[in-house]
Length: 303
Image (cartoon, rainbow, N blue to C red):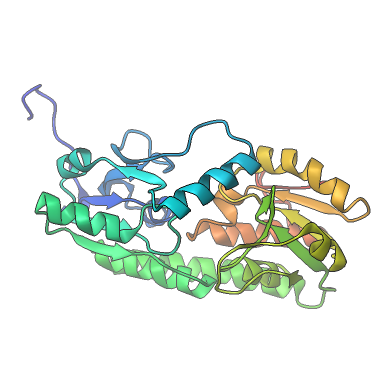
């Protein structure tokens, strides 16, 4: 019992995990290890778990102002996120999951290392930095191993690979529409990392994306010149409702091209198990007669 008479939480496997990355929280939860979480970020889907990372981004900014704010912070060398060192110390983690993939997307590992040095913590730090779908699956295995349950990782990865194989079989003989994914709309950004691969796995040919690279801004004139057959609106960090809203401006650029809006935050830009759900959602949007319709809230065809 603690001083207030409450029974302290019991952590399975003798493990306390601080997840400083939403994708890592998704992985831990999908592994069936949610009860090991001792600390998370403000973006993580883990109600009741102490939050130790918050954003410095002012709320309510439209896309153009968010882009400008991020650019100014990067140029000034200022952080995008704020780590509560006292809260992290109180969580007393054995394992910390972080990243070095994108300082705009989550707290960098270097910040965590500095904090651990200051706190005198000897927690193990695992950096989750995938660039491809296979690397995401490998990251799941790594997290499971670090958490002390490698068998859970093997089971989860096996089921995800089978789902990907089912999509591949469903779209194998289908035409592959030339598909442009927009990861931001004001200004226009095309995606990197695993996003072009998601499009290929969904049965289409990606345009303008950078495999394994970073998203980059591209002039609208260059994008319209690509003459896409489908445009997918997938604003980084935003859900389906925001994607639909931003698609209205994209419609003016591509008046005769079918549009798709997708919950990018959950199914496109976060490198966890839900990427497979993103492949399934995109495959249905591109080939609706080949696959079952996804659950509501993931993706919509806007015509």
